[in-house]
Image 1 (tube, rainbow, N blue to C red):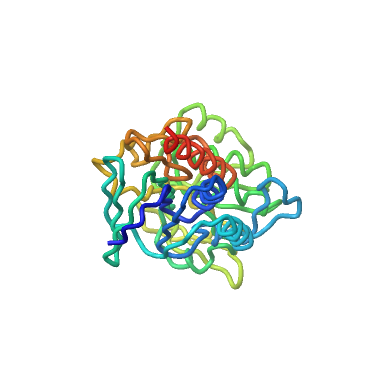
Image 2 (cartoon, rainbow, N blue to C red):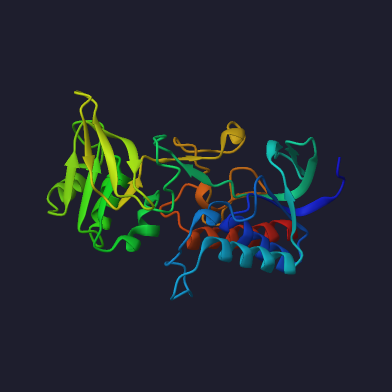
Amino acid sequence: MNEKIYDTLIVGGGAAGLTAGIYASRARLSTLLVEKAYPGGQLMMCETIENFPGFSGGTCGADLSTALREQAEKFGMETLLTEIERVELEGEIKKLHTADGKTVLARTVILCLGARPRLLGVPGEAEFLGRGVSYCAVCDGFLFMGKKLAVVGGGDTAVEDSIFLTKFASEVHIIHRRDKLRAQKIIQERALANPKIAVHWDSVVSQIAGPDLVNKVVLTNVKTQQESDLEVDGVFVLIGQNPNTAMLKGIIDLDELGYIIADEDMRTNVPGVYAAGDVRKKLLRQIVTACADGAIAATAAEKYIET
């Protein structure tokens, strides 16, 4: 067992985790960030970021991630590349057990586990990620000015984001596997009244295709099994997200969808344990809000240690 006890242990190296690392280490807390893949998380999949404050010409996720990591490490943050498999969060000293058999100890823990978009799992989805396939309308809608778009889904997010995308796109095609939308009635009414929006009922996307960029989707009618091509320049898959909280069930309070319930100071129901970023129940999941969460969580952890 590694007997060193860190002041703060951050689980997850996305925007929230890296910002928490900056604030915690700058406050002279001994800080360890544990990331299972590479620091940056989903930031590394963002080719163009145009809505992060201070970058009028935009930036890319890899560059922003590198800058955040270097800034945190400059203040003394340590990084461990492994996966946390089990946690013991009760008591003064928290114990987190890694996939390679190590145990790391900390006085406070900041959970920045993120959430992953639900995938269609169809041919072309992975191949065209960042080349026409997106999971975030707010992030990428501006990139499709004057283009034709497909939105997959029928819930509140899919329908609201379809309306949002009409600010940029010439056409928005909602692809829904049922014969009625699941979104709130008032949102449905607004979407169905929008002349830029068309709905394809009882249909699923069975393939995403194109030479270098997306140029069409193949639709399959779930009742007749008939296939048809729909020419589009982009596909927004908005069928929900899955927060990475499986190991926290029964330990941390989660909402009905599995997101961590935390207050405005990022405190969970367990003293000394905080949540930040996309894993937390909240209205807006963006890089800028993840950074804000991380800063608040680290500051709250500092105050907790001082008391």
